[in-house]
Image 1: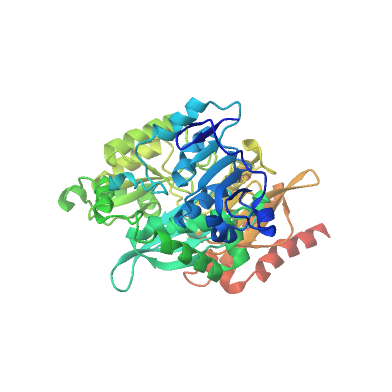
Image 2 (image 1 turned 90 degrees about the vertical axis):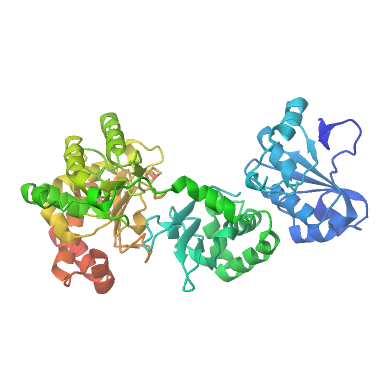
Length: 141
Length: 395
Ligand code: SF4
């Protein structure tokens, strides 16, 4: 499984955590840890505790579950600076949107091409919608 | 987002976009202070859970349209149900939390987007408006015509003019609704020859623009009065001159079992029977405005819930039968029709429509429309006529 981080292939990184956010909450809330979360977790609670986490891996369980997009967007809006990693169904045609809402790392499946993913991340220079990346809509440019 | 999403926009006083039965409905209007803005309605929809939308914001300044909708969509994305696709629509969320709580969630989220990047600059609004400039209308003197000689010489033209054309804000012009509801084709169908023909007419008479409507007709929006007679002749040649807009035979009909793999029952056979049975146009004119809407299954593509008369095809024990609803409306007074009673066999559908219309004709007061009569007298007389008769004839 390859990982793209900060717009390049990462060769040295922490593995995607298997501790789930809900379990981490139940345990000791150790500062500096990484957790795995998805749309089913309590977002308000995640936002409140995010600053204690180094990395938050958001799982896209199915194509139809787009909650991860809103989660990343709100985490960045609340000022979260750590890594937000997209895992699960990280579809090529959505990777750029994930990037725009605040994901800075993407776990690819073995059948997904790293170069294609990197291209997707920089392919579009103009956007309609403002997002977490600070790029305004085309008409503001 | 949890599932598909439909937004309807209505810019006139009368809602012709069925905006109260969409995920989001937007009504552009001028408030008492003279400012333009949107009333925002959320959570409407038809299908298996029909709901009339509710107002989430009475007045929204146009500059904040995108920021506000962004907030609505985020609230829906985060809170809409994911466990059951039939319950994943925004209408289910709005009903579950209530419109007050939903409004509060949206307002809270909106605080983050309001007045920021998504606020539309006036220059951008003006730029987009620039794409909708009025065409080069002729002056009134050149456009207008009293059409009096034509009316006298061709009564059918006079009827068509009355039934299928509407007032235009531009003096000397009229709006023409082209009926795609002739006797021989399925409602809304158009052949390639007719398509070519109507495209040429749009070029010749209406600045090259042709619009389609959700009630399965076409609109030529800018016709000079002096061209109306020629246009009518040509439409008639194309088999598109039927003067039945707003009448019983101007029905909405989904394709049903003939063409749709989701259907439970045939629907096109009903429109054929209706056209054969109610072929007297004077009878239809006398009945006045009636919206008949037919769907071949619970997905309600024919919008039967909001038909003055709605017909839903269902399958029972291998037989195609039809449920009637009465009293629905998709206009400003949007409402969902209520079920009349037990389902009707396919060969009895036109009989029942006839009975329902008879009750209306007998009971209506001066100038009362079908819908108004249903609202005034209630369901009892219709039930008595439809089911009482059946029982007697069965006995
Ligand atoms: S209402 Fe049902 S039968 Fe009719 S078009 Fe829709 S899905 Fe098909």
